[in-house]
Amino acid sequence: MEGYIRLWRSLADSPVWTCSTANQKVVLITILLHARWDSIRWDVLGKEFTIGPGEMFTSIRKLADMAGVTQRVVRTALDRFESVNFLTRKVTHQGMLISVVNWGKYQGVYGSGDTPSDTKKTRRGHTHDTPKPKKDTTIRKKVPQEGKEGKKVIPPISPFDDFCGNNEELKEALQGWMEMRKKLKKPLTERALKLNLGKLHQMTGGYQPAMLDIVNQSTMNGWLAFYPLKKAEQAVDVDPFAGAKDFYESILRGRRTDG
Image (cartoon, rainbow, N blue to C red; front, side):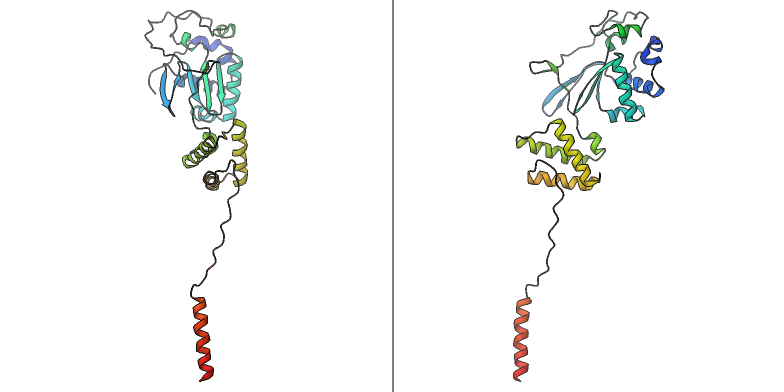
């Protein structure tokens, strides 16, 4: 990662800093370091998505790994930062979009005036005037909208990151099972997905090779849920020449009796 961010000294007098624990401060700086400076666009599953300046798309687990703290610390920190209006977040089963309030103002993107998202809570933590920035040449692209409500489109990431860890084969199998359900016109809701993953973990005790076999079994059979593996029928060894042997042995026994 290249470039730099502006870290104003006024942050030291802000409640978001002074009232945070050491670990929460680490989370705060990590968010600032990984927030986008400019817009980024890419194609995911045939759809174009945009992450704007001051935003980052992540998950609790990834943010905890980047900051070097526990997931519990991250959840507590995000709750606190949102309560003092340092950031906003939008959570879906695909991930979490974090938006730093007034990112553009305090990074010198929008100018010295207040942005529409500026609030009294934020101004209390930043008492010094913002220096007049250089002329902004950043090209801003309109964020795609979805439906009549105008909701911001969230780029999909794997909903199985926390469940599968680094097991890409299990992630791929679960994704294939979800696609199978969609083709059967039985798509999963967020709650249904959590229930099915919980059942899968309970059946296997978290043993991933067993989970992989169960997921593949459901996909191959077109099942909408997960079930224990079918026990393979025990093969019975059958000698195809057993009847012929008995026949010839009976003839030989007859000859011995006659002779």
